[in-house]
Image (cartoon, rainbow over all chains, first blue to last red; front, side):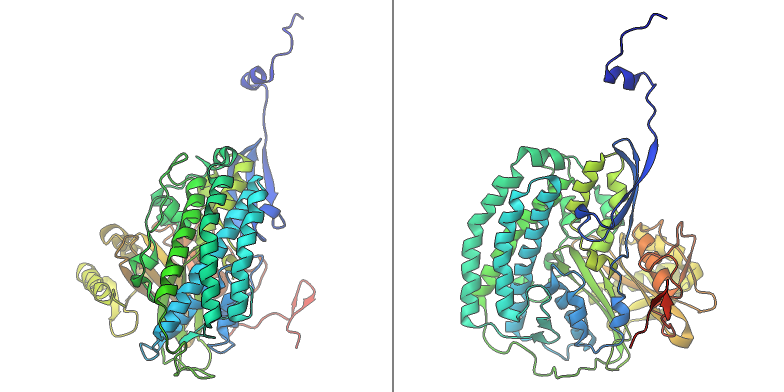
Length: 389
Length: 162
């Protein structure tokens, strides 16, 4: 009957007497850290994630079917609602595909190309600001969120002035853009760039050099290069793994070949290459590059038409098929359009970056803690609007 | 696009190496493509990945071709600075819409194929988990088919309200 006094917890755990059971945990679809209606089935052993499986489709509204019933120009409105945080990029991707269907018949005026670049890059900054802010909040830092939204609000105000909308712009249209910039708008954007540059230091102070933040993100969710490519990851997710793939550089569309900017890649500076911190820091540094592009575009902004005169109320692309893709904030967004020469598209397929970025989630979250799973999902920066389409 | 010459060159290479496995080549359209038979697809896919280095399946589009059947269009690329691309098309009949799965070749094909099955009803044989991904599990029919009619009721909720 003689027994030792109760052992410490550590001894108890190592003695083999403590049996943990696997548990199936349902995270979402209503969960604040899933950035929308993502549901993740997590198999846990205590605090450890053994496996997980994302279930998507809660926001599915069959965008592709809708586009078969509305005209080519009306479809631009639906593309806004795919990735509602970077609507400019979706507009542009779709419009480029339509222009490609015409096979060079529609020439986009030079001024319109510059306006597109300015809007897209400002939108990229707005989108990354939200990504960074909410990422900090996921991990428990609420202050950066407020700072990020302060700046994002200024960009949204600029967009409201330009297009009349804060989120779903419907601004980039086939053959150009919807409205021209006035001189006031050019000044306003220039002032914003001046205002924004010094603010970047604030995010770095608040998050990038924050030891708690680093501790939560470094060495977590390491995404190897081969896995990233095989899963079709693009955007900051693959660049975080050290792959310098950016369509703006690789296959410059629009007038991106005229601007001087760097492709930011992760280097594993806080821990391992391809961890959550690398994906985060890519976004922070990309904002700086984007502001640089906006400044260059404003400096060289040419005059002239802002919309091709060939675009009328109704367009009817000739029979054919075309696939185009552009570099959006979250990666490559592509559109495969099939036209049979009628007023509406025969088929409109959207390849969305978030759909593939979230697919890789089980691969990189096995063996982490449940709390790290939140950090990993946040670092992917998904928008369920374009995952579910 | 500037890469058109490179795309045509790649198609020549593929045609020279695989010969009869390539059923048709069309160079005159906007995006030149090769057409392969469904049964030859796994071999062609492995050739594209291992010999041509096309390691990134960018897009899988499914198209309802009416009486001709269903078509799957694969956009495959190489993840390097050149971004070499090829478009592969596979046409199958509506009675037997079977295409071998390539999820082992490109992991991303897993979800692509589930989506094509869900919305268009193409069956990818050999897929480890070919279930609906975007529509609800008990949804009936494949919405992107041209002859699709949405149900009047779903779980007692009235649909098609005009």
